[in-house]
Image (cartoon, rainbow, N blue to C red; front, top):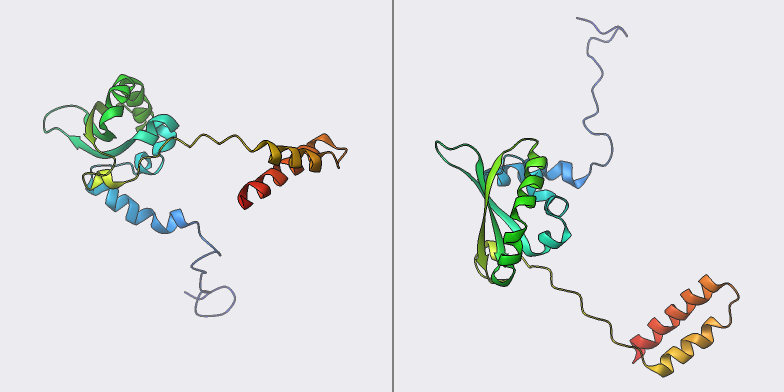
Length: 174
């Protein structure tokens, strides 16, 4: 069948349209790795912080989903540190609801916890987020210099920003 332009071959299609997001390039590999652990929906792994919430995501990692032979529903296994396990345990019913909302149906019936040290089993070697350090009180002499810089400006927002910049620069030198 001839092409309307008279050419015997159809014009070649472009294979790509510029840059692609990295997520689309790795989607197949992530899906295969997730399926190896029982995760039919890789979104549970990739969006764990959004699903579990920032507090739970900081102290838990989804490890596996297992399906029983004759039973209904799956069991999600989470990895957490020993001291955080009781706090996570109290939040499991709400977490199960959020996980099932990700799947779109009541896929997970149970959530079990596996406790480990922050670096223990192979799955436990993922770094758990630690609480941020409390900032130290700045030196009063540095505060006075930063205030002197701020007084050079009439706009209060700019004055505050310049004072903070002066304080940051002076703090790094000491």
